[in-house]
Length: 284
Image (cartoon, rainbow, N blue to C red):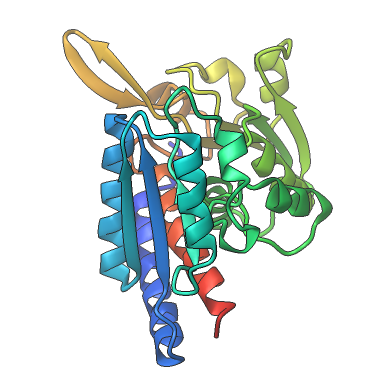
């Protein structure tokens, strides 16, 4: 039976460390502040923003929420971001995705000052990740590395396989693992023989967004499996949230596995706050 990597429990311990750091920053006269921009009417986005706002308050971080209509213009959104870039009291800016269809996320996110890019998604910060320079890195990959640290003393030399190549998770995660001296294989929708390649992984991470895609045939005995997927399905008239991994099947084979829910999700939000603190520290 695999060890369950409970992201919720790990995140709650991490919160206490963040609260200590918040106190340090405040004693130096800086009030950590994050701006949360939510454009559109996506109900999941509204829920995520509310959770981030609530956690920020718990940790002592000021949050400012900007709820914009679905028909918000690119010009208005750009002007809002530029005003936040120039506001010395705002240390971090988050642009919630997805944006309304008439807006290009990549174009808009690059308006954010890289020094306030809390999600590490600007071209500048993603370039620094590639070259190994200090920068703010994406929250989900950072949370995954933290989770791996709870079950591995050292991941250097291990073979990590990442399924998925998004700029939010797959690509930056593969680079962070490479920077940690893993041997890294990146798989995607055009890759062939996925089960055979995955079965060579010491660390298998699925961020492909396909419900219950990864079964026992993908997993080497004793591997660590991290499930990034958050998929909503309906079975027998009941809606439920599942990951990319067939948890009940894989847990019998893996040495360690993260569940969905209570896996990667809480760690992502925790690192959003940690990144906010890192940006606020720059002002001390």
